[in-house]
Length: 329
Length: 247
Image (tube, rainbow over all chains, first blue to last red; front, side, top):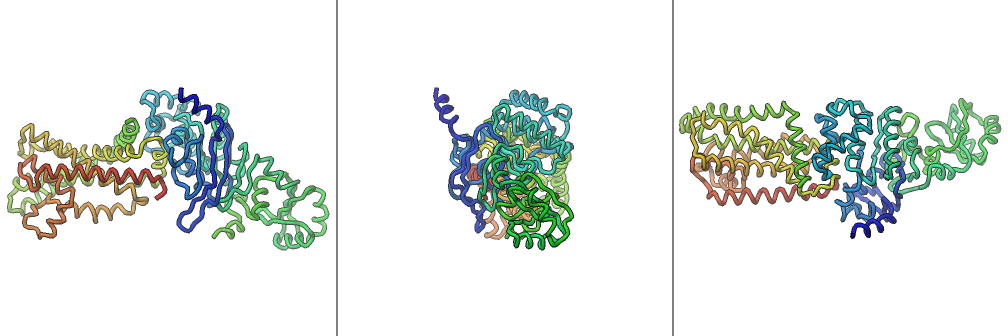
């Protein structure tokens, strides 16, 4: 029973593991030494701004790119030398749609089953099952290109699940979906994790990383923080005081003079304080510019990113904050 | 094997749902035959039906060449819309992806060529059963060769803007050099030398040989050249697919 031995070994290795990973595209150093382990059964999010190296790292795990240095393993299999073994164990939802628009939903799923080595009959059975679980029976015969955005994403998820993968890769998978469609999509992902699956996702939206068990913050090709959402927020220490003023730059300068460590984001001036509510009255009373709005809140992942990098992950509109743009080459 | 089957099935299903492409691919070779045959034939010293018989295998070659290369070009569309990635991350051997694409392109090209084949009796050419089988076998070999050429080329491109360039700078010269429309006997030496490295020339010569029993190259040489092209080009395509998106 050689399989038993393999299973025994593999149950102790992480689902995903990167060691000293570097990736260079010519002069661009996209990944600068990534070390990472993702455990079985967890939802792991890679959170960072666009251009941070998320998709590069994702593509290396998914066997689409080769690292320039270092190794990546999926369930103990090398993502370069044992690509076929890795491919057998993963399902992927890409950032761009990967459905054949002119074929029906059912045909799309069926063909993907064939690609993963199922017999035609097995692929048909499995597609039918997934159409039921994902609530897509009604649109099964429809051309993929005629579905709504949310439906398309769910078909993509079904496509990734046709092969009952051990790990599910999601690359900005709910980008552009409305709240309801996103919630439906996530309900399915959680069901998959509940059944023992592992999820590795990339995103630049903090609310999409929030449901993850652990989050790695990535910036300029390096992981700058890693932990559960709560652990990351604890890093900020205490709470956050956010001030929207008539002149944020002047407000920040004044605060700096008075012993605070402000950061400017698109939302306003941000202060991290052990007791933000206690500082608030004094600041409001003496700040030389008019304060339009003041709020005290628990640190968000956005605050963590801003605190660690001095740049915003995204602003409320999903556009990069001015300083984030300034940081790009 | 299943991977190979999946690649071919995917492409054929897509051809089937894309009726416009299917119908236009059927009309195209008829246009070639009648426009070229009657237009050029009238001014040719071979005389009307003689010339039609001469260019018939050439038109078969033209139809096979363009249909199979353009079927292969759909790979570039797939890459642009991100669909190719979904195929590339499947646990299918890369050689099965390359070979599947080559064979599906060949099948797609043979569909319109079959229409031309059905016209044979109407054009006043009766072939013995043996000659017909020889012609069909040669057509299949030609389709696979051209398709391999298309796949090896298309696998490298990321943008569809190269299509007209390939069409005008590669396919048309290959076709004109092949002796499909006129014999190269009176052509300058350098042109005939170029024709020696043109797979279309060997393919057309084999098809013409099956019909008219007149060969410019020894048939075994032509067979070997076409098989050689198929192996090398499929290998090149496999290498590109093996590199993933790292190119």
